[in-house]
Image (cartoon, rainbow, N blue to C red; front, side, top):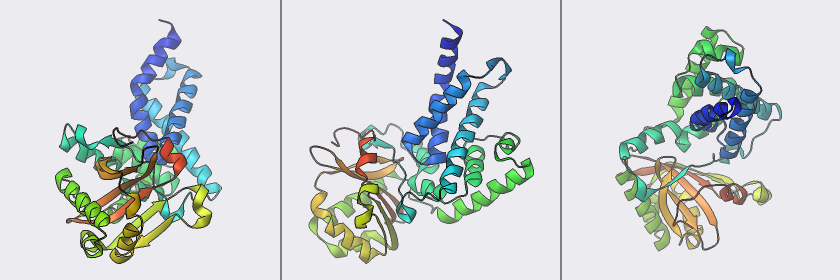
Length: 298
């Protein structure tokens, strides 16, 4: 085995971890893959004799790359969908849940609700929160990335933590109860039962529907709030949900809607006290094509 082959093998041992860091930083699976690939390129051009802790080095380099991307977005005033933006979901078959407790841990760490909140943090806050609070990177290692002192970096994390805690509800952790609520929602939608729909929705439920750049001009992407308004939307699109199936969306029970040829939408939800408080619908055709969708959902 050559030195380059050995280095590539060592890098592959860390690839999953690095993608997890980049996904939480960027909310985009495609951009996360690009960031990890850029990390590999930087490693391949570096003097590895000077790297004492390869995992730590790779994590901070990935964080720096993601921070540059986030700062670039901010500088260009990029707002992919404004309040309607929905991060790329990670899907798994509901039938393959081997350890419900593990899925709950995953939902706590990468739930769509958390990713939406992270989208609203400043780039430096997001980096500091993700690296420290989610991956236990010491502040002394994060400080050079954000060009602040360790004490100032600690304050960044504290500010981000307060915002995250204030905006993410204590969601229902039991997958069985989540499934009951989603089953009731789909049944009411298909039956055209407006009152049953309203009953399963929180009075202040917030719906984010991200349909992508191709249809933004037609105002297809939207934010809708309130149980009655969201129920009306659900009834409007009920005829197109006959192919809906339950799956795991970022560790929580959600819905994939597909016909014979393609996936039409993915919906994640937040459930609190037996009612849906938030709905996240991704219907952007280009982004849906890149998702790994569980079979037999399509």
